[in-house]
Length: 442
Image (cartoon, rainbow, N blue to C red; front, side, top):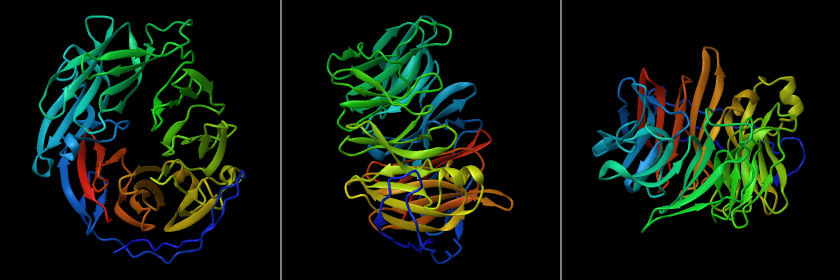
């Protein structure tokens, strides 16, 4: 049964400083029933549970790395720490109960040092690790076969003391890596980061984008691979890079940003970041051709592009920066807006519960273009603490369903399988953590 009744109200978007959608009150949702659990949440009765595997004792999942689907969906990898080492565990077999160590410091995938970054290839057939060598001033880029395993092999090496600002697969044979000088090696003269693109097929290749003269942070690449966004950090401004000319233009915003998604035609990005004063968070669209940004949702960090270019965002139509500043913890209705960038028409889906602007700003969304389903991690104040609601939203059917709920205790990461049918969730901490794979309603 559906937990939320959806009310749809179309209207024309107002591109002003205020929030952009309104809704009508939905009927109160029925109470969900719970049978199974993740590490911290009750799973709604009727939700298919493919697997629920407890992670080894003492293993702390990385809050920055969601579960990685490997071997074309036949396995799932979870990154974290165990016994003071960075570790990537692989789960495969019936109900994912076969556990192996795919990579670890001074072990598989990093035999000569410590893992700084890890990323799975688009089809999950290989895993890349950036490894700081223990006995040399060198960083190695390693690739491991996700099925056969083994120590892996080096596809590139870089002399110097670096930290890795980003590791991304551009396709199944090309890896981009951003290097910054480590804290020990950095000097006032260090004004540029280094972007390399490494080809791993055949004899291999290394391309150094040495004409990109701005400092770079973690990067997000456009679908057509012609542009990239550097998200910046506390010391580095966000920037847009044209990979064809290596031109780098600063994005004039307050503080770093987090890219939420690219338009399917690579014409714009969605990002979450601060308002003009940097005091409040919101969702914005940045259009490459005009270098202009448009407010999408006030006090929100959850938005994504559907496969047809529609923007899906969570928020509330009555919010404004002023109202958030005056009362950030006032209860407001939770709504989903569907925005067509070409027609500026917005459709509203009311979710049937209330939360606060502060909780909206902590929410997140992961969308799969394969089925246009969005997993939403959001929060609701409760009398005995903070309630976490994990919601599956189907864009094709305009319907929402609570797949899991419980008291918010620690981080949660999630990712969709390549076919958009299964959702992998990792939650908990070193005292108890689980990998759970669900099949939300389609």
